[in-house]
Length: 467
Image (cartoon, rainbow, N blue to C red; front, side, top):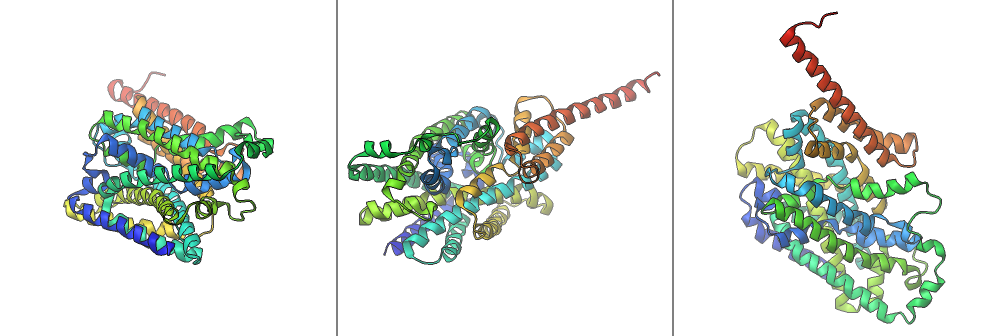
């Protein structure tokens, strides 16, 4: 019964997207909501996009298993990331009416850097999307008792359909509904759980000291810094969030929406953190930690409330995954495919964008079926190749260094260095070292290129230097 009601809930979401899809007239409508979305809607849309499977299922499960040290990304790291997004990026990027971050890279560093950044950013987003699909499958598998892989495939079909129809415009309007359901459901679950615990203080007294430690036992200072750097810096320049504030009506509202989303995310994210923290006393001996929050809702929430809660989890996932598929489709179609094909008609651009959504969804499905855990997929996505993108974006916005060669070297360096540091050299802080290395690469390459250009200018004006 619950499984049928959940499917009905998803179908309703699809029909909402279908209705709102009639507003889509051009590429800007499809990918950035026509740049006419209010502060309130952008705020909730950013929150709903960020508040996905890793918060609801992955982080609560990680804390269930190891205590506070199991998840520093949620809600602390990712809420700080949203705040920095507003402080550093939102206003400056929104001023230029960009469609994607790659548009800014093209303006600052040239078309070669634009094309390369597309292929650096897309894998990270697809991996993140795979984590959401896997979480969706987990929920449906628990609710219907059907095999996990079958439910992941079913989830992918539903999400791809929803995304193709709605575009960002439809997604932003449904995000408000989904965000309210998520917050309300988590608050309700927490209240009911607390009312059924006879003595919460006794649970806290029984906890071993290591469950209270927010820093991992035996970690070096570099490991600790890296664990924070991945969620804070690794997710700062992802297209799925950037497209949200690019949809705002003006730069000021774009920045304010990021601040508001950061606050909503932080306080809402504390709820699954708290439930996971006391989870071993609520559900002792749980074998699959990623199903903790779903199983907890089945045990503590009566009938219709349990269904609403599962609908809230689906809402969180839908909001995130369709933003991811749209982000990849925007980068692939707008910054790579359309310039090659020379397509000018807006209706054709939308068709190409929707086709890209389907392809992206199928790739994410393949990764979701690989068997990796949700939280591991999310952390991999946050660190994958983003060091170079982060460095050239910040330098592009806040410095006068402007070298296409430096941007290309830095992007390649970011793509290569993190897996080399992590898998081959087994350094304790692979992502943080990648960011530092990319910074050195960019500055050195830009200075070297500038020196060579100065030499060329001197020779052209005055001839060879005297020996």
